[in-house]
Length: 167
Image (cartoon, rainbow, N blue to C red):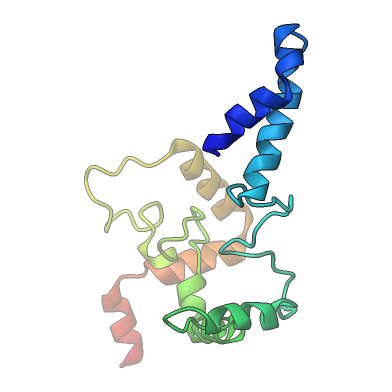
């Protein structure tokens, strides 16, 4: 590219003297020279494949053969999409209902009904105040829903009573 400037000046001397040269011509000529010297790479206007491609439910990836070709050129072998799906399915099957259970009283996903501070106030720390709206909702549901009230009673029974029933 060092010669481009002098060549361009010689080719366009008349336009430069008359101040008739547009920047579009200069830019086009510069791009053409860069392409000839292979400095600029052609842009395809296509978005390159990212790390996480789109998925369509349980359908297998249609580009799996393309990604397998890419894996062969890499140093370390990464797992194929099919292998990754099998691993996540195994993890999902190993879950139990207790893992996915949410508290029926307050709706928290981090504990079940027997460990809810709103229901078992005896296990709640002294600093627990709770949300008054949630507390009112639980009280209203206890009055209206007998099945829920029975479930709460079953979970809040003292452990000593349970031991007596088993004997």
